[in-house]
Image (tube, rainbow, N blue to C red; front, top):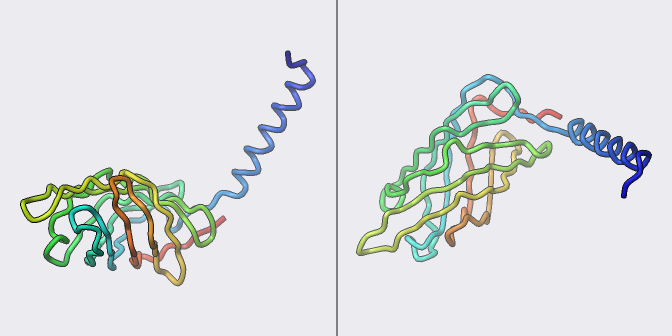
Length: 164
């Protein structure tokens, strides 16, 4: 059984660890701002028989007051399989985990399938993204459902700034 002194010490340690983790938190600016991020995406899925499919992509959303970006819309262009995905899990949440790295949670899409290609149920998954030179990128990120984000490159406008 834990004595009172040990309990107080453990409680103090937990509080200090929590404060230290908050001190290392990063956020995205400008806050309270809408953004558009056009670019390209390449994905593999059962629907493409694991061959990369290269498409245009435009992400839209906002950065909230706490410095977290919410992706509320995704438009995929390019014809062929690029016309078929239904985006799932919106809003996707982009959280800065460091000065140049973050995570995007809830990423997912489905493709209904047809006689020509099988169904794909990709995600919801969390992927890692990098941010440098005003461009958000990701590569070789696995999604549930045997899918992969082979590459992603989008340029948010207004440009994001990551601050500690």
